[in-house]
Length: 576
Image 1 (spheres, rainbow, N blue to C red):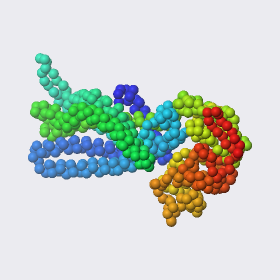
Image 2 (cartoon, one colour):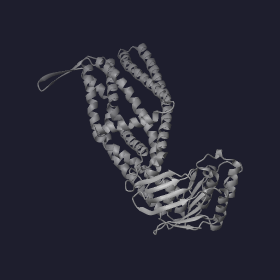
Image 3 (tube, rainbow, N blue to C red):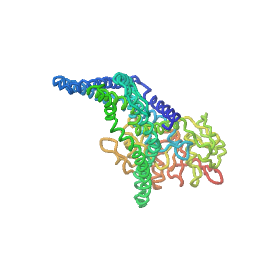
């Protein structure tokens, strides 16, 4: 909104987002709904024209004390009001249906881009060129706000464009008289003066509004960011409740949350001051725009060129013209918010469409398919996204069905190597030759990526694809049978300990039966006896699966074939 280029950018962003929201299967239904709503808006314009004519007829009858005609006009008013209200209610109902339809489609598009190409992973701070802040807010809230505002603005603009033609033509026909006055010794006559005053009046007000409200777009953009940061901090507190309680970290969390809220407060005060400055002009304008037309028409009425009804009809027509042309003024704040929403949401989708990594580290890792079922690492040297190199693995082979332990001190790249084998670590050089078959990685920290225990045990598969008896048997063997109710209904995961989360990870491995199982500290929270028992059971359940395990201590209960030490002296292979 800060000039032609800014307007062009906003139109381009809004157009891309609107296409994403309206395209796809059965797109014609959304178009049909939009057309129906627009038709009802046109009906509202027709009714407003009839109401302008009604103003003349009613006030003329009132001036002539024609009681029967006054009563008839009251009936006309009731009919027009009922028709206007009915059209508005139907349009509002259809509009709400269209809003959720378009929001569903736009949200689906945003999620597909965000999850596709692992953009959610690549666009974190420190990983990508354009990290995206508060993506959850952009997808959840900005998609909804964009659809609501887009429909509101486009429907109003099209309706107002049609209406203004009718209103202007009517105003021209009603303002056939001239305004005459003397100035600087000259006799001046302005024909159709009421017609020319309307656009001049609105144009001046629009310029003033834009100059006063121009900073609002940036402030609204910043508001969504600081609000999102505060909500994210609250979510982190919820997810880290155990750690905060155990460390007595309430005071530190209170400081952190207070700092986040201070940013909200400061932004709020800036918006308050700017909206007050703009309101010093806009509010008086809004309150007088309905009365000024009557005052402007008074010279013609007092000169006898108009009846009372004619003056009221002229004032109504002038009001319709000025209020229609004042759409920009009345919606300036919402437009500023809409511009910020377009920028945030289009920025998210553009970044997710092409998640560019940091240029500080090369992406020269090659992944190829193996012909003999083994895994090979040839000249593999991994790097962090910021360009720090890890130790090189000149050559290494893992045969099918082997049990390999990746050992080494923290920070030597054990988890990074697992990530590269799994296919989502791109920084480094060399070649990784991968076997065919299913690969499952159990990540460190044992995250639970589902809402219920059955879904968590089968993630990412649907629990319905698994035999309920098998599910119960596996979870019971892992010591999680108490987490299921007697009817086998999925139960909440609230309160799972780290050990229970890791047992769920082992259940996932058994139920998914991968050909290659990558385990990153997957049993670190279990005591040695429990670890030995469950790893021994896991190896028996998956006799043909290749195990590659990252652990700080020698895994118990499983016979190792190889040990690969990663460290400052370079990788070292030991054969068990």
